[in-house]
Length: 544
Image (cartoon, rainbow, N blue to C red; front, side, top):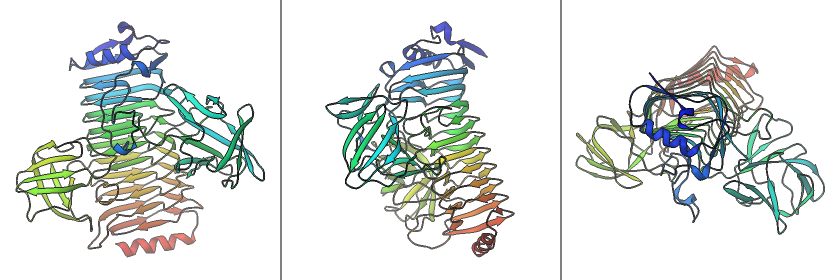
């Protein structure tokens, strides 16, 4: 084991380190021996002006139509860029890395045997802001701005300001519908709503961080309600891992990130252990992520998510899925596949020897399988795939899934709280274990098993899912929702789901929903409302 000390490269607490750190990471890529990079405990600063800017195609983030005219699509500023590194542990020693500006905190590309541990990633003055309702009158609402946001008044218009952004209070107020709202009567629940200043005729500052908005028609709200305004475009992320193997994130904290907190794409064997993705204690914000906490797309091997705390997401807590590629052309043993969703493209998750599953987009049932001989990108949205022997007849119009990129998942011992949509969204044919978690305050289904080939094109079916020993509190939607988006029923899409030894307790939940599913088992579960037990057990029996 070789130890590399950051201080010997001039990387010292209390200083700006972006260029020095990324230079050191480039040097570490030149040697594949086992090594540990050690930081002295302290606070380090990274300025966006000194960050590298690689081109990164990141699943479930920015679609090409979302980029502004002055932005180059997929160009990312990155705080720490790990590229082509083997056998490295980063020991943070409880240090804090403070980011100044808007960027992706960490990008890991083409790495193997990488462990990131024991540090916190902080964004200074992020472009997320909270308005709290103080008073309602006949035609006006008084709001108090959170104590950390900075703003100016320019020609009567109020603007949030920070490094790399200048955002008017009323930015996209007519079209913003993913605004977060935390109601005064339930401070632990966040739900989507429209912009609090939508329809405001005038906004005027009436005191320190106090603003009065005048309306013809006021939005629905009550004193104490909080509205969170932010850019939902997902331009930058927390930690992005692509094309890598054996990556472990341990005891890492991210109190805020732009976009998604963690994105794993085309990667084998992932572990996220004892980490915290939640607002800073005592901070002004109650949200920690603009979008999902975790996206796992076209990965393989094992995905282990254990002992973490997730609180305050602007989308799902966890989403594990593959991709349904539309088959554009089929000639002999060669296929041309296309990414169909604008937010997911630009990478190739196929390898020689992978099994390809061909699926009917109407029924979502398998039609045939093949084995990859060769795969290569054919532009940003297409992949050229050569099989050892393609099935007959021709497959144009159907969809294809990489059956070898469907990982096993262990999601255990986590706390999930204040999630604006779903808790765990799982569509993988690997073995799935969801156990001993606490699901609090999901505004949609606590667990969703989906699968579609018409909107998000997120594959595929499940065959072995165990949901056991969990506790579900204050969940809206269904506790467990199994809902593939098939248009035609010709048999069960999902099967092999066991729901046992869980505690279900929510005055809001609608119970359970199963569609196009078989081999569903519910047993030994405890419910707060006894009259619901009989209905649920009866439903389970009909699906067996």
